[in-house]
Image (cartoon, rainbow, N blue to C red; front, side):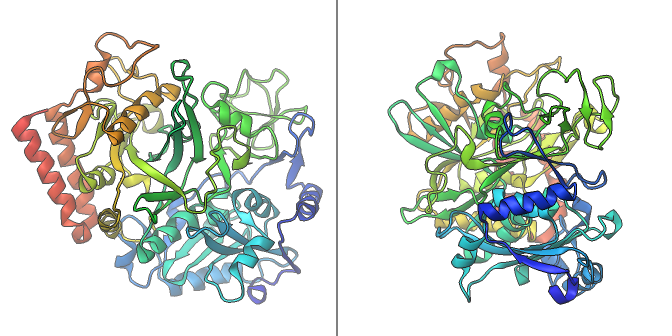
Length: 573
């Protein structure tokens, strides 16, 4: 890689505090980062990215398998030979005048059977500093690798940050990732979506485990008993807020523990349960909308040792974003580097502006979040944003039925996003942008995993976003979602009552603990209504997606769909 990229010098990262101080000083000297007020935000820095490099670029993200069919119809494909050739030309001499940083890192707790090792080569100090937070990086990773271990080869370069010369390519069969032309986290922190999900999902299929776009949280009851759940939601469905949930006042004896907010690696444990680890060491969260009400634990987490990217920089060297609090009267410098006041038409912070913070700083971080064996999962939750179709919660009938439900989850768009309401977008298991191989084979792997788990978790579906005829949300969400989680745990333990419907089990009247608050009249009935006609139309809509998957769609998926249709036609709701 040195011969290809021709850096002026190469730095092997050891992960030490002295190295962090050195790299921070270098980044400040080049203007890449700004030190924030160290009394108000100790250890925090600010970064502003190129305006054309502020988000993941799905259209430039490729799965590079030898056979196009193996990448599947939901991924962009490029042949390995073409990808190595095309990107190699961009990488050629791209690090002249720069330093090449060699970053050994571990995803997952060091020494865990779940852990995977990667080595990322990069010419970005920003990437190195982020990797210090998001992974277990440096000397410990290199020692874990040893002289002959397997690792994911990750090459990253900013090149000229030209969107027309930007590619994020994954080579599952080579356990390799090449990313060029972007310095944005999702494109450049190659341990995150690239390794932990796209390459991870492929490795999971090959090795018999699951890499999933799921949060992991633990619930401790007043007697000290723990249950853990993993949950997958498409974007804008409250994933991080659920991972850091604060119990409502009516449940003071309960504690909710955060294990991870984004990614779960799941393996069958020695005890026959499905065990999960969070492979990441930090949070790479969206700043806008994060505040004391929506997510107090996230806000507390980012008060120190955090990298803020593309938020508003205030004159007092602190930060602000839309939804944090009232706009600062004195204004500041916006994410584009321009003067900003509350009267400005441009937003102060980019809608996808980010914070990178160590997970260990979260007030709700689980004492077991780095357990090398992982935490035992009692329930898996799938969810989407549907205004009228899905009940607040229902339990699926089996692992195969749960896999079918996960494979067909979807969210409806809003008029603000598309100019058209109610457009259904399928995002199976919330993995559509992140599955590193054919989606049909991915569903088959899920079905096979169900046969391997001696004590499988129950699978549920939730929809926090059901509305009335005026478009008002029927369920308050946020901390009140604990009530739904406790019903699920009751189902796992066999104590919560349920009513069987055509789509699965919904809470029996009185089995959902509503103590301490009340819903508007008729809301509860609407939240658990199963509309036979709407579900039959849903089945027809699902077929459009299944047709896209093609002949590698497991027959079990069509069988589960047929059985659902039969139940609806026979029993109604």
